[in-house]
Image 1 (cartoon, rainbow, N blue to C red):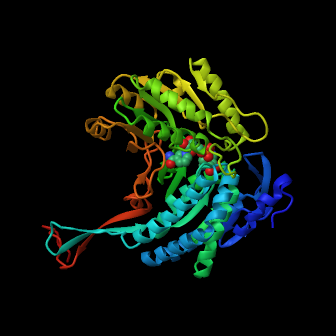
Image 2 (cartoon, helix red, strand yellow):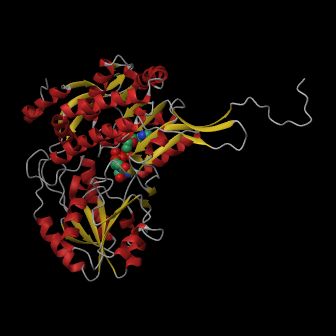
Image 3 (cartoon, rainbow, N blue to C red):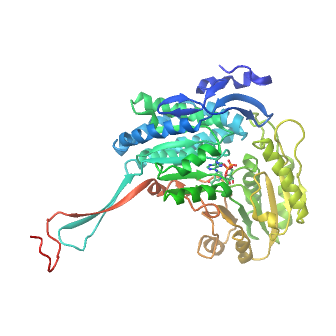
Length: 512
Ligand code: NAD
């Protein structure tokens, strides 16, 4: 049971339903829960009070985990893929049975509103379903050989171990995109969640661990550790991990990429976004305005796909802004677990300080605050949803400020809007609101958006798992979840088989 949890301990009672207590060992290593690293407290972003304590991993715990994982990999890669799919199906069922509790935990520890917390867990369940089907479709191919009585095959085999390092803002969905696919592809998973969301890491892992144990499989197939940069760096350096999937800031992602490349490993990077919505003169203004609100304010602006730049055609500029300013005033800021709240807190006190610093920089670069612009006084990391009028040339517009801050920018032509969309270092998500087929096809074509996600008449966020998710340029180039993303989690062998036992032509050589 959860005890001594400050003023609102009753609120936290549900945590015992998902295997959490006031003091938790944060690492599932070799099928056992242990911890010899630092003891940390995880905080509720709505009041910065401790929720529970967690023992993180030491480097010795890490090493123990990897040794067990290496052994488990030999077992897991030989389990037939559809059987691996059945294990992932059981993980999905386990998540389904705890959906509400896990969603509440997400809301409590990360700070997103309850509907988003539940939605995020549902996304992992959907990924499990997707991966179950995929487990029967990891198809190779037969390629015509130019030699008689030879056959060429393309085979897909597991990599062995996949490292997954995740960010605080999607503490379980990103695991789902990676782990569900990695597991059906026959890989063991080594997961390090964000240091500020350890309870989610533990709760998710407990459900996976139960499924593995029930099926008499080695627990080390899924190895999870709580900790920060030290454990992340250990994963990046480890030659036993052929693929490291990293989700987080472009700055840290680049370091991880360099470390992994230096040992000839592969990375799958999901990094920062700086996403734009373009509203053309022929757009459905109401649809656009609602979508912008959802995309800019949802998850308190802490989605990688949050809309940060609003590009408005000069003829609709005033109208769209007027609608947005009216709706921004109605956004209810408050406890993310409370019904009716639309905007929860930022994740940490540091995020709140970054918001305040960011507003100062914006003003110093000529930005004019149209609404918001201030942190909310009192406990918790709350800030006001903010709209800024600014030039698209301002340096600050090129950066990702991880908060609900939207830049309103004016343009005259479609070409100018596309150029502004593509003018930032990041290339994750982008949307256009228009009724013109010409604009739509130009937008998705070679001279259109340079992003990984290119939408029409829907916001920048809310990607479906069936598609490949990820972005270009400083966003890292990785693709996760659906479509053919699974190929990154396997190694491809081109196999040539001589079934006629014919000798190759070797003129002039006598083999005796
Ligand atoms: P972050 O880069 O600070 O941390 C991400 C992870 O990296 C954490 O687990 C952290 O402990 C770990 N880490 C830190 N230093 C490390 C090191 N030296 N070596 C290895 N690992 C290390 O990011 P964050 O603040 O947790 O997350 C927010 C960022 O993530 C935003 O930029 C957001 O856009 C991005 N993000 C991108 C996607 C996407 O799919 N493109 C999805 C979610 C979040």
